[in-house]
Amino acid sequence: MSFVSVLEKYQSIDIESVIDASDAHSVLRHLNKNSLNIDDFATLISPAALPYLEQIAQKSHDITRRYFGNTIHLFTPMYLSNYCNNRCLYCGFNHDTNIKRYQMSLDEVENEAKMIASTGLKHILILTGDAPNKASRSYLQSCCDVLKKYFSHISIEIYALDTQGYEDLIQSGVDGLTIYQETYNITLYQKLHPSGPKQNYLFRLDAPQRGAQAGMRSVTIGTLLGLDSWRKDIFFTALHASWLENEYPETEISIALPRIRPYYGCYQPEHPVSDQDMVQMIIAIRNFLPRCSITISTRERESFRNNILKLGVTKMSAGSTTAVGGHSLDNSLHNQFEISDKRSVDQMATYLEQNNIQPLYKDWERF
Amino acid sequence: MQDDIFEIGGKKLGSRLFIGTGKYASDSMIPDVCNSTGAGVITVALRRVDFNAITDNVMQHIPSHMQLMPNTSGARTSDEAIRIARLARATGCGNWIKIEVITDNKYLLPDGYQTAIATEVLTREGFAVFPYINPDLYVARDLVNAGAVAIMPLGAPIGTNRGLRTEEMIHILIDEIDLPIIVDAGIGKPSQACQAMEAGADACLVNTAIATSENPVLMGKAFAEAVRAGRHAFLAKARGTSKWASASSPLTGFIRNHEGQS
Image (cartoon, rainbow over all chains, first blue to last red; front, side, top):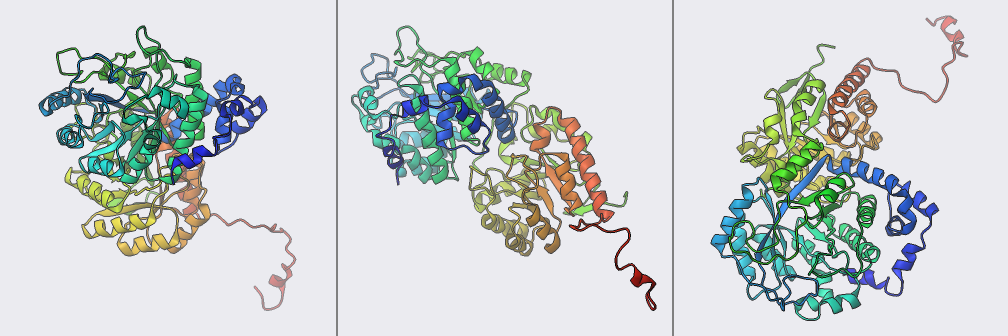
């Protein structure tokens, strides 16, 4: 069974109208339940829930503290390669973009790893563009052999693979998969991905499932917030996460919430997402999926990240760069997107400690 | 009550409260919590320990007098649990090991079958094994046969603070299993720990309720006192409850005055 069969049930439903039709009475009723279903979640992300954000946030904080404690898990991305065969309209690594293309050698990967490891981080997220002819499976496996010496937890955010591909990388030391559907709106998806392997909506939709089947310890999903109405995309993200939790209970399911920030010269979001919208989705997800990890990246502003620490977020990137070899190479390669929160790992950890939150550098070991 | 020493795994313990190291806002609170609880045993998730850390390391904060009980949190199979236990011993954490094998991330309920396999293997290797389980009599019997030194049934799912939801099943283990019963997980309030001890549990392990309270040091003290109170009540053999009143002028009182009755 694939998640697509769940999505098909919603094909004839205008989910945004259903969400918007929620009333205040149902918000309060759902808030008092111990266990929420997807209809309850729809209510919590509705406009009718806006007057109750504080109550929902209090409950979200309480649930987060019980399951995750007073901690935030820190990690950082490492860009290995920016070669890409896709033409995603919103992406800085789009095949047609005139940027310098580069892929790190294994020596460069080792230098980059040393630089990152010197910050104390033990969790690395490695990224590539969608160019298996360059960042091949064997290249990734060789990179993992290097990275294993420095990190106890390696996650990938690369092009979608088949199950065997994920199994091979697990054998090489990978234990986490991050893969974003970008939008669940198939019509919009086709428009945003006019060519390249990522055009295949269904192959990407099933990638989290294949990762779980292959034995990934953690699978992170999400949409690129701002491409479509956030309420629609978050509804289907939560539905997908819930389905994965039920089908693959041994896998830790996480949701990441990357938001397109409207920078000059960059892709402008068709559906801008406000800070209030972000808060509403974070606390609604926490109430619906109490055990689900929630990740916020350095795309977000420092002040916003500081303010949402106690709302339900459990993982944060820090000391990030979105350029290939951004930690160690001295040439200035193009960033995939702009970082807003430019704090170092040390500065981030200090801020957390000052606010009675323990920064977690390590959460798993390849025993 | 000074003679009420809890002997387990070759150790004599003055406190029947076991504590944890997870979820604290800062690991630097741990020594003060050890002090306020008077606990002698502390569990630590090996997956979070970085023995080569250049940053702060939880192990640096555990007072040397504490008995370490490393746990296999994060293990999804008996093999992973066994590997974590071996690493714990190889890195100098001793031979106590709390087995946690959890294959369901949604409810974090332990897998009894995988736990029993790991217990059997590790006991043969000389570990003092403390398996964390659902309070299931059959699994508990398997663990006795596998050589566990205690059984650690959950009161409610980890982190829920929902109290002794499995109370009746825990009573069965207390009655039927000839090993110490240490209630672990789900205890949210000192009164619930007291309740478990009154019922005859040998000890309680409490982490979330202490670590995530506004004042972990004070909450630790409250739990220590509750565990002690419950233990005293158990030893004092509190009278059972009854659905019926006990009349001060009983209807059958005349029998005592009847010829031949005392």
